[in-house]
Amino acid sequence: MSEKSRLPSRFHFYLITISLFLLVLSSVFLLQFRNAPLIPKSVFELILVNTTSLYSNANVGEEHIETSQVVAERPSNSKEPPFPLSNNLTKKASSFIRQKLMACDPTQARLRVYMYDLPPEFHFGLLGWKGKRNQTWPSVNDPSQIPAYPGGLNLQHSIEYWLTLDLLSSNVPKISRPCTAIRVKNSSQADIIFVPFFASLSYNRHSKLRGKEKVSVNKRLQEQLVQFLTSRQEWKRHNGKNHVIVAHHPNSMLDARRKLGSAMFVLADFGRYPVEIANLDKDIIAPYRHLVTTVRSNQSASFLERPILAYFKGAIYRKDGGVIRQELFYLLKDEKDVHFNFGSIRGNGINQAGQGMASSKFCLHIAGDTPSSNRLFDAIASHCVPVIISDDIELPFEDVLDYTQFCIFVPAPDAIQKGYLLNLLRGIEQDKWTKMWERLKEITHLFEYQYPSQSGDAVDMIWEAVSRKVSSIRYDSNRNNRYNRSRPRTLV
Image 1 (cartoon, one colour):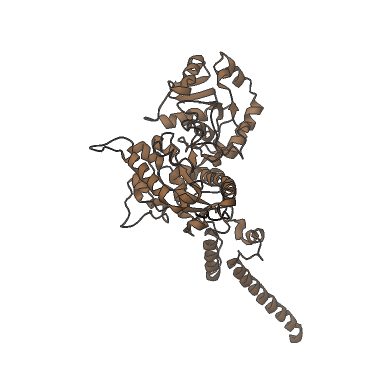
Image 2 (spheres, rainbow, N blue to C red):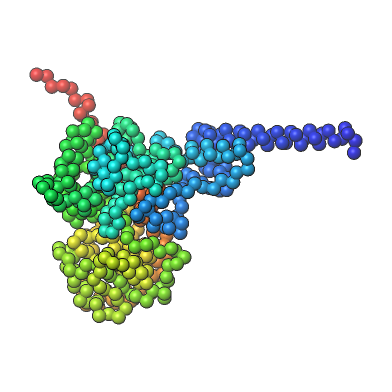
């Protein structure tokens, strides 16, 4: 071949090489400005290498469940997604893209949240945390340094802890989390105002008088909180309707709930609240943090592998609506395929309950002192079909989640008729039970609390539920402002 004939080939080779280099360079440049309207989100996600999308961050499944077990006593660290790197330029570009992706854009978040900088004695100080002088919040950059929430029964009402951590991390670019809710520094930019008071922990640990105290720490903190909130312009502007207060323990906020009743409460149920203080029109029902270990989907026992028909372990003699537990105990205690015993968390109680539920086809959730308990969510984590015998129960996220697909509801008057409950459960065929069991495995992640939060977990679902209330708050506010702003001053 002559020298002249080889020239076009070389020219084409160099031209293609230069074109590819410019294409890669321009792609990196465009990625840096991904928020521009010229780059649709769907296109940007396709550009991400290794088909890894950091927008959804929906790490559900076995890895998701395993993570949630670690954070109960000590939050686990987040894992950055794998990026195959070939050279230093790609490494720098990839690092920049990853950081940009993990930083939530307040204008794109579904819920913009302003959080009061309350003194530590209202939140992490209750966990024994002591920061540096004038330090309000612990650093959330290193999860191993975050104060751990106490275990045992305290943990079931730890909802305010997870929500507060999530808001603190929303402004940290390197922490990968959903962008459903993001903290803003100016209350005028916020959809809602979050009150970071660990009310359940305050009740559990500081409601009794100690030493020479005349007023308990819990009561004093509530009094100070009422004074603080009612003096703020943010509260006065909407009479507190756009404020979110977590009072998950049924006895938390007993002294302050009436004075702050216009706010949106995050509760376990309405069992100890009058309807004018708490109701579904304005408030959120949040799941308990389950105590048993979540069963992996691939290790969940099937119908024939579960020898126990129905399982219940807990306090049997209860007051108020919990009398039904006693009646069911006498009806079921001698049945060979039923486990109905007294139990507590002491010793190895939680592990024993987890093993029992994971070996049972049905787990009984019976009303106690209140309509709800963590037992329902322990059953869900164990993939044991819940049988709910609690007529006044309210369930988390029921506006978007159909519980009849994975739970059985039995009216209390029917349940205590001799033979009714056993005939009902024994009449459920394997195919129907298996469909409910499969659905349980699909929705378990909706009730997992963890740090950092993940798409579709309990923290994310609570923020979604709050966001669905915002439109009604705006509606009421705008309606009330019809004449307030345009009404002329009265002549004297």
